[in-house]
Image (tube, rainbow, N blue to C red):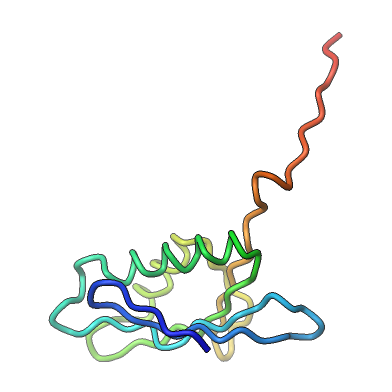
Length: 113
């Protein structure tokens, strides 16, 4: 388990194996204090986590949880903007799979006729 903090936002990432997949982590407790919400702290931290996931090639799972100040639809919109998609509807589980590393992409030249 690894804790991250950026500005006034914090979260926990837990790496685990899932059905034979080695590179999966669960993002839990992404939280910004009420007095610091809507200032971009959670988005900055999520951007950092997604970049790390792409670099290390692991998938990120999360279960968006709203509270009295943030509606679940707003959370889902934020996560979708970072590449998360619905994996399961009940309970709602979102997943983001790593983007391929530039060094692992092979571009083959084609001959134009």
